[in-house]
Image (cartoon, rainbow, N blue to C red; front, side):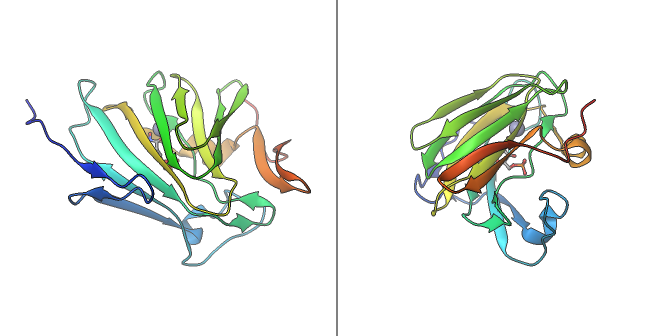
Length: 183
Ligand code: PAN
Ligand code: ZN
């Protein structure tokens, strides 16, 4: 049995204290995710993880700080994934910034939800998910998901999402992804 514990989250930056496990994704880690080539050391996002056993009796929690920026007309975004255990659900709580949460099922249905301070997005089991920063400041959100969920990035790397969020003449637009491989 785990010992109860408390961490302190900076709502503006996403930093968690005391120490936590950090995953940092740079443009060079995002190759293939965008229609345009991307490379280099610029940081696209960081995930601050609180580690607990990866079992279905615990909840994984973390914050993501997704920086603002673009590759071509596509906003900075997370890689996106299905949970390896497909029916595992997740909740996101945005604490700072503005974005879109793109979700899709394996049979090609998709949903887009807004992310803004205070948004609580529910991601049901079976839906892949990717966050997109559509503003000029970092997007920060807290996530909680079932401990044994796992992350399947390969399916998204192979097939992509059915839609993209791009910058249009009057702001963010959702457009079909010409590279999407339907099943
Ligand atoms: C989130 C994501 C986080 C980074 O914690 O893992 O925002 O996105 P990628 O994992 O797609 O790189 C989550 O959905 N966890 O399950
Ligand atoms: Zn997830």
